[in-house]
Length: 289
Ligand SMILES: Nc1ncnc2c1ncn2[C@@H]1O[C@H](COP(=O)(O)OP(=O)(O)O)[C@@H](O)[C@H]1O
Ligand SMILES: [Mg+2]
Image 1 (tube, rainbow, N blue to C red):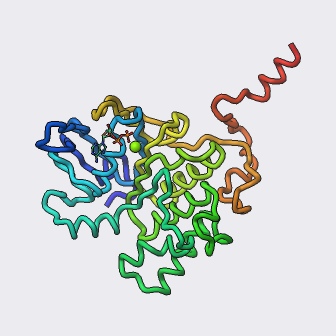
Image 2 (cartoon, helix red, strand yellow):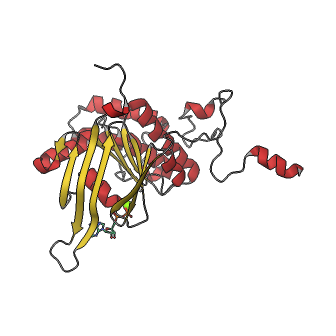
């Protein structure tokens, strides 16, 4: 056994070849939305998927998340060839191996935050006490301890998304699929959500697929995959590093989530500014000139 894993040793957790997805099959209005997608994702990789609205991102995510079967093509998830799995087996994989985060949160209404997080564990048959303890720990992790008994309608968008992220981790899945999770949030709240994804990737080794319209957020992932009209049209490496932002003092839950924001920058490390904001030095220079 090698003591350290290199990139080449990382196993492919997702393997897609020639994935085609059609709707209204056999009807005059038959549509082909995915045109033969080839994609490999390594275990522990943080990948973003970018593309115009209608390009097929959600359709691809639904195939990857086993919410929908491809019309043609090979898809192997964590060693399981989905062509050889029946619907019960696919449901099991979906429940155990995949956590979903959606743009519109998809929390169950009239059900408090704690119960929402417990739900995937209820389906998985986790005993009640263990379920509650784990849900509490996950809500604490996302800085939502003081809102556990709140109903979704009593929470802000960012708070709902943090509950949804806690829920996505309920069964400790290896893979997180996030479909525009910051799309309905202002940039500061989106930042808090993105930081949680970085933590899930760095601290727990989660494989993350993030669909986003934000170039800034995509650039922070390890690889950016571009989709256009149902085809992968390009792939490029990203930094894999979150952009350093100035401390955010008002987390909605009143609790700091991320240590790096609260700590002074280490000496010698440049402070990166958010895209589009002038450097303080540049501002001063402009005033002086
Ligand atoms: N269940 C469906 N039946 C028919 N057409 C669909 C269905 N789902 C998606 N589409 C079509 O597929 C195209 C891609 O949709 P989608 O994957 O949601 O794109 P994106 O997420 O990139 O915005 C759109 O034209 C959409 O109308
Ligand atoms: Mg979509």
